[in-house]
Image (cartoon, rainbow over all chains, first blue to last red; front, side, top):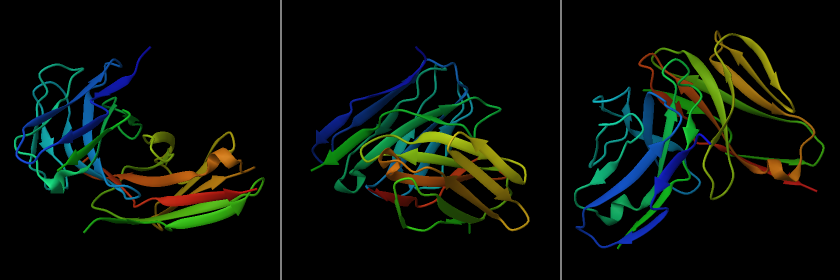
Length: 113
Length: 109
């Protein structure tokens, strides 16, 4: 079944640690996105990709980086986690021509102590 | 700057009809989408309007007026399970998606 996966679902980590949030989709979508969402708030686009070897920064300033080496995989890395990074991170994907229809993964809830 | 405005909360009773409005101001515009998100869950796509008019999908309908930079989501025959947050989202001229702050819908019995 075509789907989009995120791991881990929950992560508690200490300040200064390097972390990578994983996102994979089996739908063959070209476009992938990372959003940050605090509880009850809007989604903020932090990174997106048009396809392999393409990465762009979104509207929200972020200290994270992404890579797109394979179509199905779009990991997000925080080199040095801080308490201000505590949030939910949502990965999404869409077909290139119908990007308005985005499919979201279940999210990763990150708590940085 | 770019912005989307939608009410923060709406309350309605089971079986009723509710309309959630969204006005936008963006650099370029390709279309308006609506997403539903239950507490603790991920957003799920509901509808998309690129042209003026009404799009109907079951109990949900979405409307767009490009000249007024305005759209709405209409939910009919409300059910308790419709209690969730509803986000409007605009695909702007740079093909980026901008989300509104979301409207929390409370459906009462």
